[in-house]
Image (cartoon, rainbow, N blue to C red; front, side):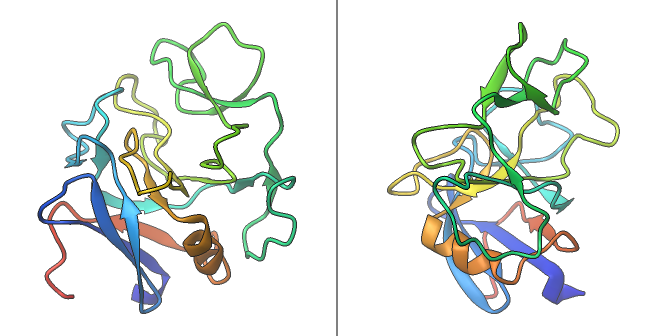
Length: 182
């Protein structure tokens, strides 16, 4: 079962960076600017990455940016009007939505490359609890692995390597403390 778990650890000296381990390979990753936080203390907008064991949900990608994508996931193409609701008062909180919308949301169709690949983690989605945080994604990092708003991000090159063997039956475990097995 361990070979189906992506493991993520924060760095000891920089809480917004970490290491992601998948099938014997280590990748540098970006974490939330708030570091890693217990799900009990997690709140919308805190900038923290929750720790725990999470299923990998749907798979979204930009087919205009990644034409030859190899993965076991069913592919959902990101369209210009795709977004994710982050308004705790809305009935669609922490869910995929289609624009236009009068609620607060995060656009999935972006020009910065971060959402060329987006895999929502199964965080706060069974049941959805308002104000506990939304849109914890596994996605592509900005240059320099700068902090995320709570997501886990790796370089596009690393993502494409990981996707070759990652699938919907895999899980992601985010640890609260630095890796001691390196």
